[in-house]
Length: 196
Image 1 (spheres, rainbow, N blue to C red):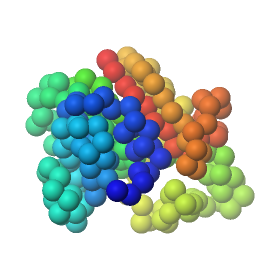
Image 2: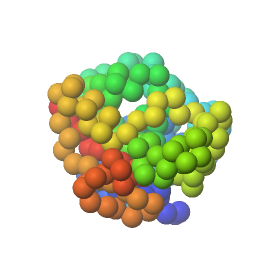
Image 3: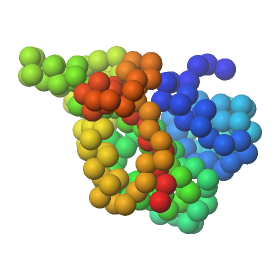
């Protein structure tokens, strides 16, 4: 099995054994496969991209083609122990409504995203005047699926406004975890575990 992306490794380590999970925007199913194999989780996926759905199916993973913006509404309340949205929040039309839906269908929700307030992004904009292309954001602004440039502080404000509890949070710089101190400036990626 291939190594998981750092944010997915954090999530995989925290999901309780034997739980029911929906991985929204599951990509090729790396997290689902790890959860099923290592944690004996009933993991299912939803993915918009047809080729990624096919890749999941080729791995024998249960996945449906669906859009997080509209299709989460079809799931019943509390259908899962965890709803996971990794590196997808910034691509949704209404991130606030998607987070609400995650917490409706899951007792807990993991949300991970790239932090657009990271110091390298700020420096690139300040000195170069252009949207950055980095290892973690590897494509030009006009090719990216990102439509909302969320920061750690923006996300904290959103969940506070909605009365959502942050059960745990992790911040990553490159592939390494860092302390929450000045995470809005220092973290390239953030992972939040949310509950009501």
